[in-house]
Length: 100
View 1 (tube, helix red, strand yellow):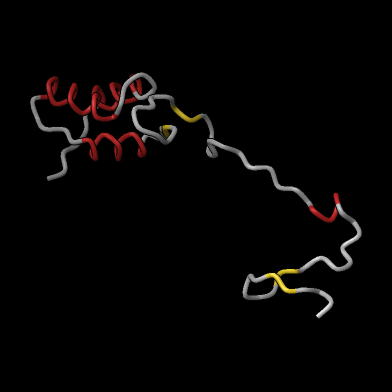
View 2: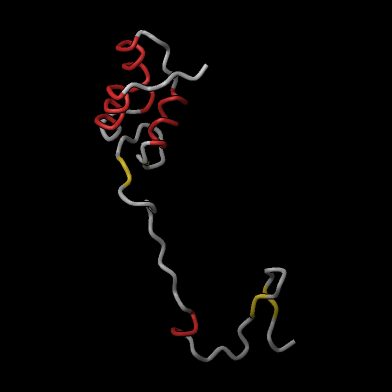
């Protein structure tokens, strides 16, 4: 059954998300609140609060912003303006030779 989180419990998640594993937060909240707080409940509440963590086991650092690992898009035509003989992508996503 879903329980309503108190402001103190939400604040505990906010304060400790960057220092503790979600499992440890769940264990501590279980001790403090007197009710069973699961790992999944802590994760869901953390996500509702807009707190994202870096992926990986035992990693406690919080991600700042939306994309934890920004990707760089490269315009291949700007690097290689001469595309003669270079395969191009077809509608199926498979490369086809331009000459054929």
